[in-house]
Amino acid sequence: MRNAKLGSLEVARIGLGAMGMSHGYTGAGTDDAESIRTIHRAIDLGVTLIDTAEIYGPYLNEELVGRALRGRRDQVVLATKFGLVAHGGRGLWNLDSSPANIRIAVEGSLKRLGTDHIDLYYQHRVDPETPIEDTVGALAELVREGKIRHIGLSEAWADTIRRAHAVHPIAALQSEYSLWTRDQEEILPLLRELGIGLVAYSPLGHGFLTGSLRTPADVEALDDSDFRKNNPRFTGENFLRNLRLADQVQEIADQVAATPAQVALAWLLTRGGDIVPIPGTKRVSRVEENTAAAAVELTEDQVATLDALTPAEGGHHNEAQMQMIER
Ligand SMILES: NC(=O)c1ccc[n+]([C@@H]2O[C@H](COP(=O)([O-])OP(=O)(O)OC[C@H]3O[C@@H](n4cnc5c(N)ncnc54)[C@H](OP(=O)(O)O)[C@@H]3O)[C@@H](O)[C@H]2O)c1
Image 1 (cartoon, rainbow, N blue to C red):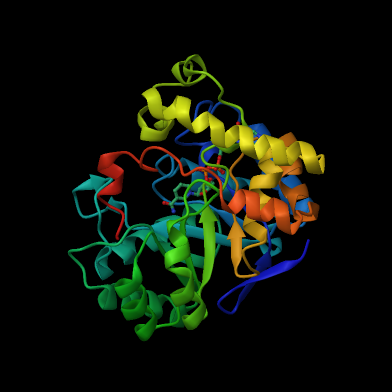
Image 2 (cartoon, rainbow, N blue to C red):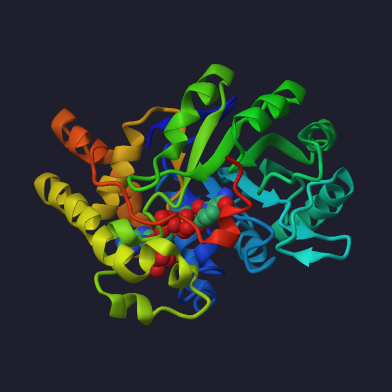
């Protein structure tokens, strides 16, 4: 697989999101052995960027990734995130990017991951209570101490990105970017001006773009803990209207003898060598399918058709989650 650049960090063009192995999706945590095989298969196929976060599980996903990487740590670029656990008492799903919280968070992540350094350490969400300069200042100290190698932000917008980058180079912004979530295209010129890469999370539209959810009954059958159950794009009329998008992706897939997941990823790869999708899966067969997207060629016409897909109906997160996203 070819490489991509995230700032000065080089990674293979397609990464692996580990979240769903322990968190957020139906079946999370039910088959750790298959999840670990999936991480190993990804590495064998040339994937280098492995993505987790302390909040996934919480903590369980980092522990799982740490177990999977025993003896293989040096083969990967390991990325994790802090800032959605306030260790000082407010607990889970509370923003805290204060220097004191980062100090506690990084030690926990290093321990769970079984490593002495994190290659790419992201702020998971911007914390309006802590100036970004203080957060990045604390991260820059961790770089100097060798505990982390590169700094990332997630779902941050222009002003924060500029201010953060002025304190210490930011290697990557990790935000939702896919055929049905296009607002990152507004921020791409700034990222390119500053030499920051874009890590595209949920590149398969939480699985929707693969065509695996076709009826309201399919959504109804998901676990109650599956966050798609109250995602506006998967509910009510929106879900039915959005099916058209999945059909359009399927049409292109038929033309190029690929799967819809591969088309969704191949389209992202056409956007530039500084964009790295991190599709999430807990299955060996799907990591094989997703990684093979690096070899799928789309014609200019097909790219143009995909560029012009019907916009999705509904926000890409529910309201509570949207409030933590900086715009
Ligand atoms: N920074 C952030 O705030 C943030 C937010 C969300 C996610 N992320 C990161 O981004 C990664 C990817 O995002 P995501 O997992 O939310 O969404 P995604 O990659 O768009 O979709 C994952 C879903 O699609 C299914 N899937 C994967 N490959 C498939 C295929 N070839 N055919 C059919 N279904 C397929 C998965 O099920 P199976 O597992 O059963 O295959 C899972 O349900 C996460 O793992 C996480 O590391 C970051």
